[in-house]
Length: 145
Image (tube, one colour):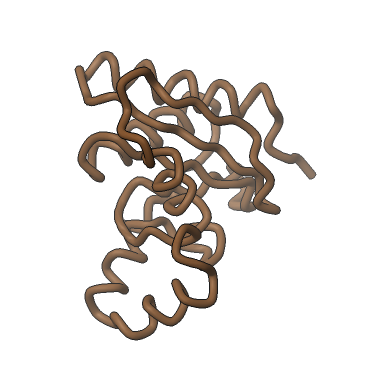
C-alpha cells in the first residue's frame, strides 16, 4: 500500500508551477492534499490575488469530499444546483469550489492518494497544470471529465 509522499507532493506542485510559467499563465496558488485530507504541500506565486490559496483548497477539498474531480462537480452544480448548494452548506463555504482545477490523484491501480487544487488563471488552465504535475509524479489524474 502506498501513500502520497512529501517528495511526490512537491514534484506535483513544482511541475504544476513550471507548466504555468511555460504557458505564461497568471500567478497560481497550488495545494496538494493526501487521501485523508492532510495538507502535504502548498505554494502561492508572487502576484496572486489574495484568496487564491483558499479557492485552490476548496477545489481540492471538494474533490476529496465527493470523490470526484471538480470538473464533474461543476457539471453536477449545473444539473443539480440544490445538491451542490446543500453539500457546500454541510462542508462549509471554503470547502467546496465547484469549478475545474481540483483533480484527484490516484495510483496506477486506481487507489485514491489525494488531490491537487489550483487557482489563479482560468479554471481550465488551472486543471491543465494540475494534470501535468500529477503525471510528472507517475500518478494518475482524475479531473471529472
